[in-house]
Image 1 (cartoon, rainbow, N blue to C red):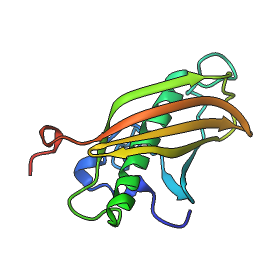
Image 2: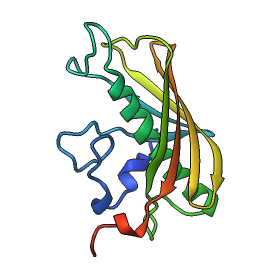
Image 3: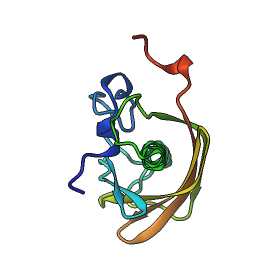
Length: 157
């Protein structure tokens, strides 16, 4: 993981997301990278990411799946088009659909590993399937349907 994270390739105007925006001082700052054909991110939940004592809040897990999925979609679309991450025009995706299955309680105090695999690339849409594990135990599965950001969401020039 010596290469910049997918999210670090986003131009400033697309870097404010709570989950992965490098310019959001209060955000999670999720960082995703390629690991062969899979994408991977590691996140260390803080003590305040709590649901009940000892376990992670499910909304955090959904946020991690969401941001890792859209980041993977952007990187996969660049690969698919033979483009470098960070090239113009910006390759940025938003969530059209998010599905998370919680398989077991996710413990606090250990890093979470989020892994993604591209299931489909078609037009403006990329489908990413994901897993979330803690200490080697599978805790959640998810799927993100990501679409290329529409012009109506682009920041003013």
